[in-house]
Length: 133
Image (cartoon, rainbow, N blue to C red; front, side):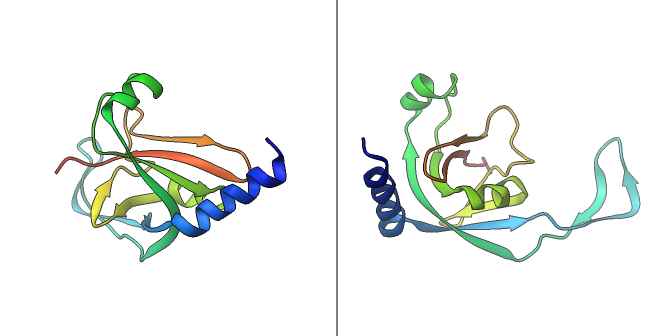
C-alpha cells in the first residue's frame, strides 16, 4: 500500500474515532511509623492529577487473545491505539481509567497484563486488562 495514503488513513481513523483515556501518574510514597519493607505495608501513596490521552479503543475477545497474543485467556481486555508520544505516559502510570473502570498500569501489570507493540506511522498498540475488584 502507498505510504502517504496509509498514513492519511491512520490519521483520519485516530481523529474521528479516538476517545479520552484517564492516566494517573506516579506520585510520592511516604512511610509511616509502622512501615515494614518486607510486607510492603505502612506507607501512603500520593497519586497526581490525571492526564488525558487520546486513543482508539477496541475490546478484545478471549478467543483472539488465545490465538494472537501469547496464550492469554482472560476477558476484559482492551486494545488501545495511541500515538508514540503517549506511550511514555502509559509506562509511567500508576492507574488507568477508561469509562470509570480501572485497568492494570505498567508497574502493576504482572504476567503480560499490559503489552506495548510499536506500529507504523508513529502509533503503538497497547493491550491492557481490567482489574478484578
